[in-house]
Amino acid sequence: MARVVPTYRARYAHEAMRDLEKEVREGKAAYEDPRQVTESVELLQRTAGYAGSVILQSATAYRETSRNPNSEANKEADRLLGEAAILANQLAQKLNDALLHARTLR
Image (cartoon, rainbow, N blue to C red; front, top):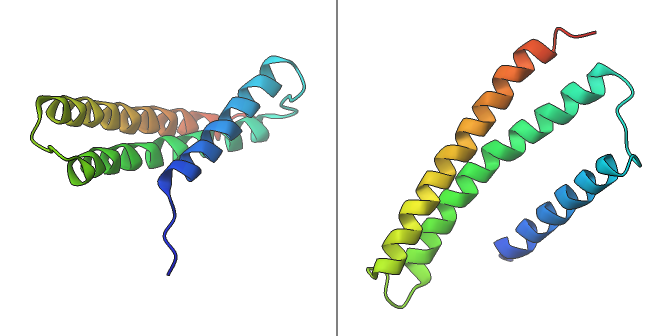
């Protein structure tokens, strides 16, 4: 089975989010009803949830691929990536909380 290079997937996700933000900011994309907004928030919630896992996997990858996994730089990267994963999970939870209310909008 062929392996997937995570960098490529991360690049595609980044480019898609960048393009989405630009299209909305420039008025090229607009929501027409609350269901579209809710669906978009739900997709963003899922994205944030996946981001937490991917960030933790990145921390592990640093340890596994580094020539000096016990270096101070690796330890600091591990700590900061752990914090970032927690923040991503907190964002996913906040978006989920918002969805509970958004689903009642008409």
